[in-house]
Amino acid sequence: MARIGATPGGGVHRLTLSDADREARDLFAKWCGEAGLSVAVDEMGNMFARRPGADEAAPPAMLGSHLDSVPCGGRFDGSLGVLAALEVVRSLNDRGLRTRRPLEIVNWTNEEGPRFPPAMLGSGVFCGKYARDWAYQVRDSEGRRFGEELARIGYQGTLPCRPRPLGCYLELHIEQGPVLETEKVQAGVVEGIVGIAWLRVTLKGERDHAGPTPMAMRRDALVGAARVIAAVRAMPAALHPDMVATVGELFVSPNAINVIPGRVTFSVDFRHRDEALMRRARERVLKAVEDAARGERLEVEVEDLGGSSPLPFHPEAVGAVEEACRAGGCSFRRMWSAAGHDARYAAELGPTAMIFIPCAGGKSHCEEEDAAWEDVARG
Ligand code: GLV
Ligand code: MN
Ligand code: MN
Image 1 (cartoon, rainbow, N blue to C red):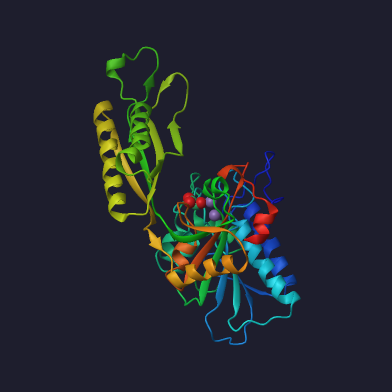
Image 2 (image 1 turned 45 degrees about the vertical axis):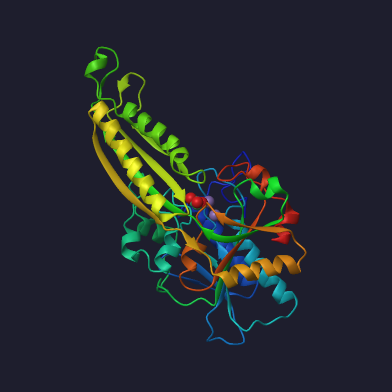
């Protein structure tokens, strides 16, 4: 799978609804067919590969994750969960085992979100958080619509994308942080997912010549953005040791060495498990934007790109993961996820849990992302 969209640095560049995403989907569908599964695609392009159960009326046990990646991302984020689910099915097939519930492997559309924010859009529509037609009109930075790109790659299915009960949902993922590796623990039993908020801020100043324009006369949008970025970076320390905040995307216009930037657009991402703290963080970011705009006499636009509230997983499902670790003789610790996962939305439709495995140096969303095969197999 990692050959599709492979980057020279050993990662993958497989943005959602790109040609590489289509190729990954085609390969996944082919492997599912070879494993005897029937593949259905819903209106959001979510793919469900089904293995019948003894009780076909029972809500399915669902396993999976996503095959899309961030720009120049890693080979494991998402793909691990989808392909591990396929391995589960192959193992059941090899042993001739029949489960009571039907099993469904899912590949969710647009888990990552950088191309078509917000993240977890496919599972978000599936659980009823976002409307399908709202999702279709979301545009990427080049103005292309989600719905058009979905149709273009041939994955706009006919199955309605709407909530249905899940017997359970389970997602295997690399930790994407350093805790398991540092503590030499083999598995993370995930207790819940932090709240995530995404904003897009646009600052408008005045484009002008970098030479003759006196410093006092400038309205420099990039200087305003720099002040906000510094404030975002400082915010977690003021609010809570576990809060994180990031400006990861920046568009400078016209982006030329001898032109005062007239317009800057940037993203803000902040996360924490406490909803009240998330509200305070939002107020602080908005205040920082206001202050920066006043200082540099800029116009401001703030767009809420969506996000998800903090969510603790089902205690029994979490307990089942812990029990499996014990039974398998695998060391574990409980932990929250500071990364977003589709399990966040699946949890609204049935008992949900996640399993984390260690990853090299805790690194993720980069080409260096790596995991040891023993850890993958144990997971
Ligand atoms: C998805 O990987 C996210 O946590 O943003
Ligand atoms: Mn992921
Ligand atoms: Mn990711």
